[in-house]
Picture (cartoon, rainbow, N blue to C red):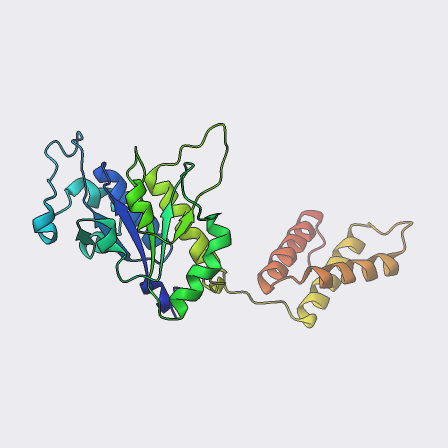
Length: 267
């Protein structure tokens, strides 16, 4: 069973006027890591880089023909499918036209009266909207200039990632990762897939191990001038409280056998 809820397909990431080819690929990787697959590119304005000396030019009248360079796919690292399925449009208005909630990501003060939300605070509303069958968009601006005032006006929520006021410099893909993580973390996804299979020790196994320990300690003459019964009772309670697994019991008994062999008392 997938840990990614089906309603995540109603949440899209919108990247407007992105300039670095690698950032698009890294953003796709960040998305897929958190279960999001819908990427919309608005008027990509790709710069020349050592890996992409001649970047493709976006033409609004032929938006559907725009093809990302190999550099973007290289940085996607396994999320090439997100890039291959990406929608390319001419403006933010088109990217969010069918959405009910569109969140403009900003790190600047703006001349807008809309309240500013953090991802943690706004995420419950976004998830509830998606669960109700509504379309949701998270809109990120250009790496250098962010979103224009007109692009922000296309959105009905303002979202910001709070950070160090003396130094706040998130890369575009890092910002996408933070927001996507917050969305995924609030789905209460089942984490059992990350936990190893456990085989709790039975009461009989714990008692047998404690008896083996007592035998070993007796043979080492450990209980000289000590209350053996009281000590073993406390050790038994200790091991019961620890809730060991069968593998733990086997490990401890292997240690006891080695000690007995070294002292010449193994039977």
